[in-house]
Image (cartoon, rainbow, N blue to C red; front, top):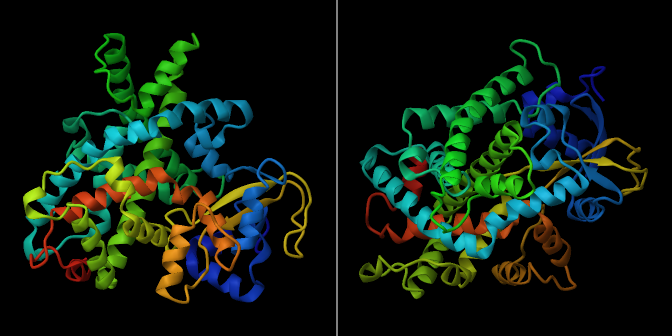
Length: 425
């Protein structure tokens, strides 16, 4: 269980995946430990995670470590509970309806096209994939979630500072709840304050624009929906709550999507035959023909890309952008012969450990993910259906960006060979 109070937090922070793998080999899928100042039960395995997720509000409840709650703030969605959580989620989810996603497609296409022009100008010198994809996803999130104009979302040095602040906040999000100089929590709060200062400027500009009736009547971004919700209820705008919600949306909207998109590029570089099949599917929909480069992408076309969607789901399964989640036990219950005590923290891993026997199993699995049938794939299918990492919003964002990227690149060009680009990175 580690040292008093610290537990095994230091070992996990320093060794990361090696520490988790060592514990997995020694104790199996479930074992007790002590992390972030709290007794913790670590849970792995599709069946075990399934019971945790299906036991929401009955066996367990959402509760992130104290450092996460302190840095993100009490006003963000992940830290709200009961009716407040339901109301906030209902408002925010309006920004991710099918109609809203349809409006986001041209924005994503524009940003990807602009970014791709910069990537192609690098020539044979190559580029680092993850930092570039992260900046791309950050610009997209600023535009579709915060409603920033293109010139404001691509702010050059200011944008880079904001991205670096998010990276610093993310690095220290999970740390011991000790706010002293140079501690992880101290650095995370410092980065958070910088982000809040930059975001407040955008919020005030958005409020002025809405009061002046400058909204164009098109789709409403998440920030606008939160502001109008407060006005409709006759409530005074809570600037701190808006900053916390905006920070959470930007964090969840670009960090995890950038990670998933980079994993997708990596796997396509490692498996060129899969990339070729993807290109064949895009070509069959008229998205790769040289004479049809201006074909308009929309949700109807994206939903027809079955094989591409399967590859994205498999990427999320193999390398989930969110490694795990935290819950607190509401009561004592038995989980695979282990009994987590009441109020103990449950840390579960989202990576589903499963190997497909044949390519046909993969196709059947992806086709039946939403409506799993009885059989060896059903449990894993249920897990992927419930996980936030496989939400339609994230898959559609990655799918749109991937289609915009791929349709602009042709075999034979120096920039097309992902293996070389990854090798240079």
